[in-house]
Length: 200
Image (cartoon, rainbow, N blue to C red):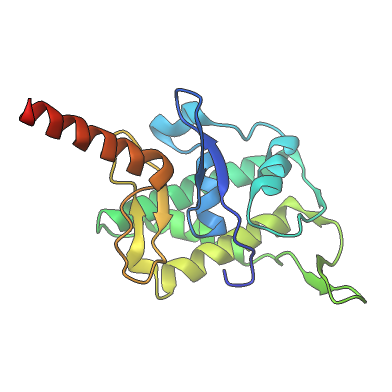
């Protein structure tokens, strides 16, 4: 994860307000594209262009040149859903689903995106890569997160109506919200209104 640039995503609330969300890891950025079960209605990965659009928004920098097939988009959804179930189980203190771990491990066994350095010392990617290389990079990032020092800090936003998942990499480890700008601010506003109501 350390070799990836910190970027964060611009998301929109149900009212259309834009806010910044940094889940703290590349693999968790993939979870905003949809998910299993009730999260299927948020699906945005329908065709190869959708997956490359997600890469453009992700913390991968510079953006790699990708050639993605329709089958690899299906693989991306499968990997994302497996990761979603694994990290959700983690946040609840439950056992990792074995079938989903195997999906992660299988994706990670493929070659990942290959970094390179230019003559002027800049970072780039070695060549045009496939969607499979991309998914291997995401899967390896997930394994690094889930077996690393912040594995116990993978959390779901504390807002009742928000299900965004992030890893708390802050020094004190007290992050509660997906974004202070969004859910953190909504909590402050509600608390202030409740206080005024009690005083009134």
